[in-house]
Image (tube, rainbow, N blue to C red; front, side):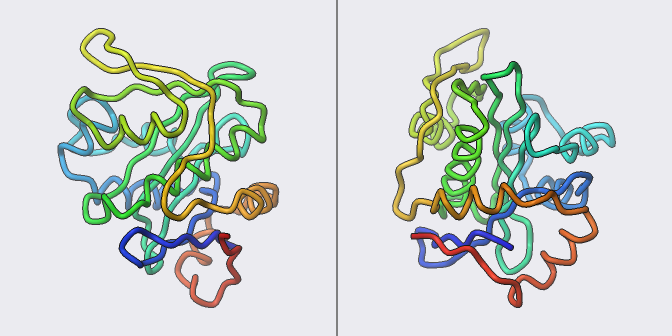
Length: 204
């Protein structure tokens, strides 16, 4: 199952939760990032993704660590996640491969993940970005996170809220999918490769 979203340019993407251990998706999105996008995402130069990082980024459980992936024509093109830092706070992070930036995929992913965060009792979201990353700054502001300069970076926190954009994600569809039992990495991979034949949870 997926949540279908319409993109700014008239195209579409499918969103679903990342399955635990789904390292191949993490790797695919990382490979689609330019060196600048990798630095902006990880805040340090990252020519390759170390094995420990791959395993950590795929170590999702649906509550402490929640991640969603966006797929275009069955190919992973973006990820968004939150990781709890306390019972009611979590750190938010996201990335979209360079080829698909500017289409609204980041907005859709953040919209979906903040919807799940609110449902899971998260009342504060935290984020850190590089100065000059205007697109991420604007998206975080729409998600409720206000950033301020701190030690050469921009850091902030705020109450998560629905992301306002041209094609908002249907929250009921997101929560219905998030409530389903977590898929195994092998099941999720099979679903991704045959998404055209899978039922979708449509947006409003």
